[in-house]
Image (cartoon, rainbow, N blue to C red; front, side, top):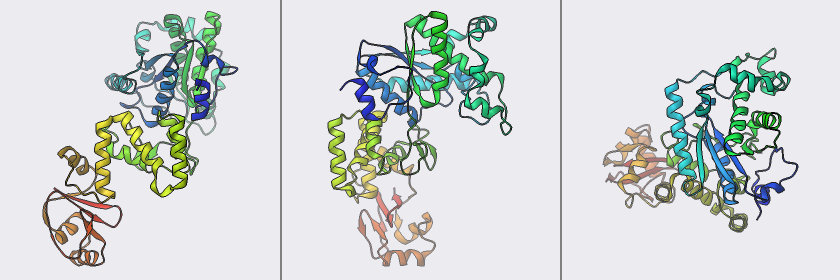
Length: 403
């Protein structure tokens, strides 16, 4: 399958400056994609971009991955209703190192180069920047941006000169990378179209050369119509300190039926023949949730590795499939400890009350007599002594780990 066909099939078609996508199927193109260090981790919206870029690399194109040490000092204002607070320089430095490490993990077996735009901005004089860049970007094009109009409108909160100038900085990134590395394509998310086109215009005006932009679409939840990628706790991150491996896996396991096949195309590297087979099997037997299970396995493996995905699957089985916890390793038990309440060995009734699964001894006894309590997958009918490790379950989704 050609790259243009792959992008179409997977749902990665959005705005582009190309008249048609045939150049993507030709000679290798040097391109770049950048992430600003506004946080110390990428989220799954950026993961979608990373996987799209994997397809560019797999089809022979040459990737440069940018960490925005300079742009991160200002912060992209697009889509923001209020002025961002400037991050301390130490935080920007820490965040960009974290993003670079995630690049190395996600693209571990691929050819790529990492660059930091702070390296070419740190010694650039303000007057030089105004003469070369500011002089060549019409104010009308900057004022015409939707977010600028919103911020400057009657109900807007205004915009600082720093944030207003953000697109100039990103535009110069493209110009610099064109000059120094022969990069002729910027790949970005849909929200970066305006900033990316600034670079195209600079290259055409100052270098009399052609450059292009290719953007991926915003991914929406088909059930809600809202931006995909949020859990009850907020954004879903790649860093385990922000979103645990267990919560990461559960997010994918519980995605909506309407969108799951689309998510398989976007967030995994599975070929078309495999995804078509999964789609047919899921349609024939939706209760087996093969698509969700495959999605959760593949995405967690891509981000966290084979060992961790196997561990989280064992942990999930101990909670929901009655597998028990006797075969879990210490690390897997520790994973569970971070996600559900724990108790020491003791009597079942007392443990239910102390953990909050029951309001009182009488409530605990009623739950037991009504068959609402199971231990290691087996329903119990009496107050029993709990031994460690064991899993106590109330109803479908309330758990207590005995350690």
